[in-house]
Length: 485
Image 1 (cartoon, rainbow, N blue to C red):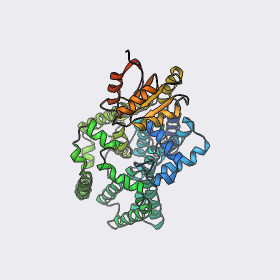
Image 2: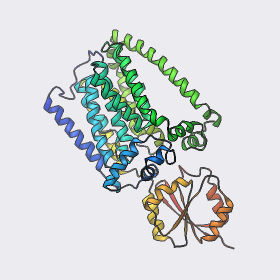
Image 3: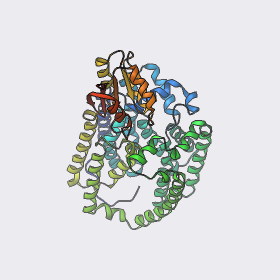
Image 4: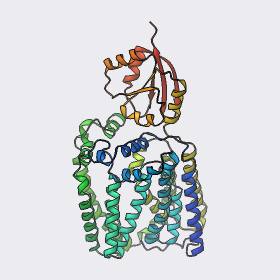
């Protein structure tokens, strides 16, 4: 994208077709193997199980807003078609492995168009070994497909900006429409493509008029999106930011201490961010234009201290996406991860003496990806349910709070043991009735995601005896027996 006087890359013999094909084939085989490794070893967790539930209940209920408020319908429609083949963990997660593998190829294509073949090979390497992308390559969720669709739309946007044509416009409009029907996060792609247009303008690789092609494609995409925008499900999604009972609001207010009053002004903050984003595009254009004219990019990329900072930030980036916390934030950033990796591949100082450091970072990235696959489990619902099945009696009761925790439990739960989902607001009279009907009560607790004030545990501690606690990963199984008279 930008002119460069830096030395020709020597890490890859990128002009050799055999080398390029060999490297790409090796990367595809490795990311394929990483995705398939222990694919069914981890039980389905809450969001994966909820995807199955929504799909079983059908698209009519989804459009009515009765089953899902956080996502558009395309993923559930695709999942419904795939589930006709079976419902084992390996089979259900297999498409995500395919999407993740294809993302490496599309990332290579995108980086080659913008930065050349050598940078493209490095970008493909970083995308293939990205620990966070490998993590979501092993989930029954829309995120692996979202990353792939995001890269495809950006390739189509780049083609439209560089070589406008009716076919390029149509492909871009279709891909963007599919992306926003897949996930609401895809709206971020409009900002990505606007930045791409500004960057290409700054280096004189496109004309101002191509911006109208983007706008026209966005308009066509929103016209195609209009039927979904009229559904009760979409209306429920728009109410989520100001609904204090939804998961994100609870997370922000109770976990991160965001004042509840601020949640009532979410739409204002979003509108302000949109206006600020447009202003930032103008500033970005003039900054990129000035840097391009004076070849500042080459000067910056040759600064040793910036090279060290870039390598250190990349290492921190790897660590952050291996630490088994903040998955909500990771999902929100996931769509942008490939572009950060492409930017790092372009920024890399292409000197022969830097080859060892790039190889080291690649090995660290692969090690981080293997850590995610081998060492970090998901919520162990299968193991927790199996333990209860082995030790429960027919008159026992399993309690889960909030009630949506029954969704993953019921995938693996023994049919003969009763279970009950409870809301955050406890009904003590109902609890007393349940306690009199069952001699023993099993409580499954997710310490990170359920009953943040431990109301149910406190009530049981007061009215029953805690006989045992068996820990699983992010789940504790507690057995309560009648209190001594």
